[in-house]
Amino acid sequence: MRQVILDTETTGLEVEQGHRIIEIGCVELVNRRLTGKVFHRYVNPERDIDEGAVQVHGITRERLRGEPKFAEILAEFRAFVEDAELIIHNAPFDVGFVNKEFERAGVPGARLETLCRILDTLSLARRMHPGQRNNLDALCKRYSIDNSRRDLHGALLDANILAEVYLAMTGGQANLTLGAQSDGERRDGSRAADDRAGAKPAPRIAVLRANEAELAAHEQILAILDKASGGATVWRKP
Image 1 (cartoon, rainbow, N blue to C red):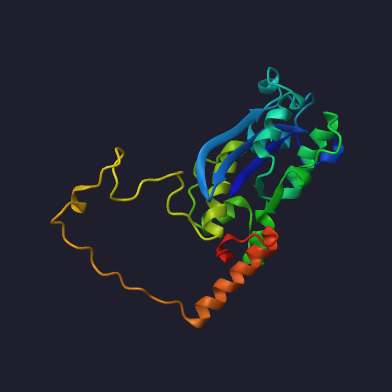
Image 2 (cartoon, rainbow, N blue to C red):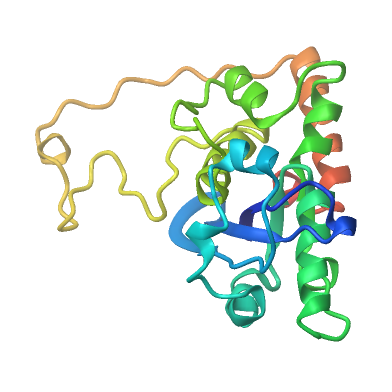
């Protein structure tokens, strides 16, 4: 299962008023593990940046003068995200901006909704935590995710933080690296000394079965994930 966490920074809040993308950041998950593959570009918006937006992300027009226009990175971006499930916090915002850039670039019929499946983590969070604050900072606090580097917003930084939040929201992930070694295996493929002949047997592990209330709560979370993912919840697959 390939997923891409996506975030953008823009010149302002309203795409209808001609505001544009100035930074786009994506990180890849495969089977719920970060692969290390990223897509990160700054973009020349060919227009001024609202002062309020600069205060949020710290990116000025002068900083972007030598960066490519979105049309110049479109093919590379499309290749990175196509056929993946996009995980986006407040997806209508980012999707609207990306689709407008597709339109400006003259790509007929290209829309993120047709290239990818899309999961909005803001909508998911609102269903899981009704009546509570569900912005990215609030979710970091709720799920004990370190966001101390987030003095200013940044597309790649926020995509990495959202990856951790998404995994925590949907069941957690003990190791975010792809192909992690087992505890007893060394880098050369040999086993640790405790696995050799004569090592003490492993202690017996107690198995605690879920009670009816816990099973009901688990089923409720799966129903939420079913709705958000269009019925593609991996935990229901045999």
